[in-house]
Length: 241
Length: 197
Image (cartoon, rainbow over all chains, first blue to last red; front, top):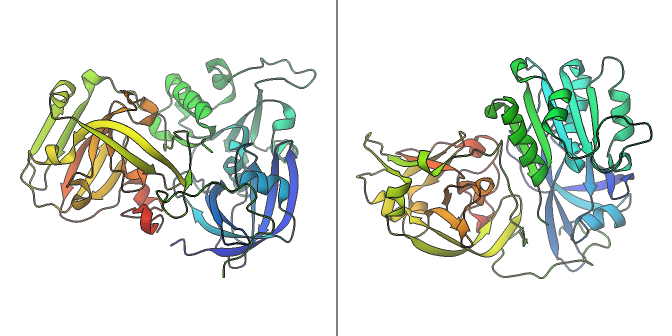
């Protein structure tokens, strides 16, 4: 399937997700659908014709004309502050995609799936959680989500619901401060925490890791150290401006 | 007429004629990899070339360091839309390396430690356009940026500059490498935005 050109999109909803992030739902007529884990390019055009393009992961998957992004604001950024602070329902932008054919999950695969997110790295993994839940495969999926504090967790409420009876296995890791009553250690993910919250290497999970570069490097190295086959660890890093 | 995004543009960045279309400047050096970072010791490192006729040549790290080394100052452009201007590298030209073999191949597949592959036409590797680089900004290349050594083909999108490179296989016909099988363009010229399928 070829990507094709830019499609006009319209903002349907802009919902606060954390103090620095918003979930955007966009209507994109003719959208060809996407596989869980894919991303899009978003193009913004100013009145005078100036343009900027950035890539964002999709929290949504599947068919239909509505797609969902969750955008975390980069303070010195050019595009993310507009999407997090300024954009309103009814505003227009352009979308190209879906993009990326490797960091994706499709139903039908055998064996367990391990998802590990740092911060806004949850977005493509959220698409996988939703896809696995809808496919009746939630019991084979575990998610380890590292956030600074509970209020920094995008999709916190929905994850809580999807992780209920028979749902995906969900483990939180707080790196700065935990909610009241939290008894697990607080701080950067270490080998003990990874071992406790993830499928064992002997079960041969496919592991998806997404987050800032430092987080992904650290987690992927630790997973290899625990005995996971590097070829079964798929990573998506973001960083830069 | 493109769609106009209401109120967009207040925080715009300076444009620069060195930026290809659809790119933005970054001062960082973002990392994009499909998996964990391989850790390859210099003593274990080899770089080899295999021709379409089956002839093979390879270098150890010490043999490689004895080849003519060039300084390269260049801009780099990632398909994820960042560009970094004025980077400095040291490495061995592909002209030097490919001069050691007899070939009429028109394409090469770069192979990396860790299993990554990417295809590049020979005409993009020859003529002072490509290197195997082992130093970045005066320092040994970090593993997360492809050390001990990576391909450097800076006039193409940076996924063509295979990290942890261990060799080239030369081919008569073009074949897709890793990202080229996963949605990205066979060639990857940033100035004509050869990004995706």
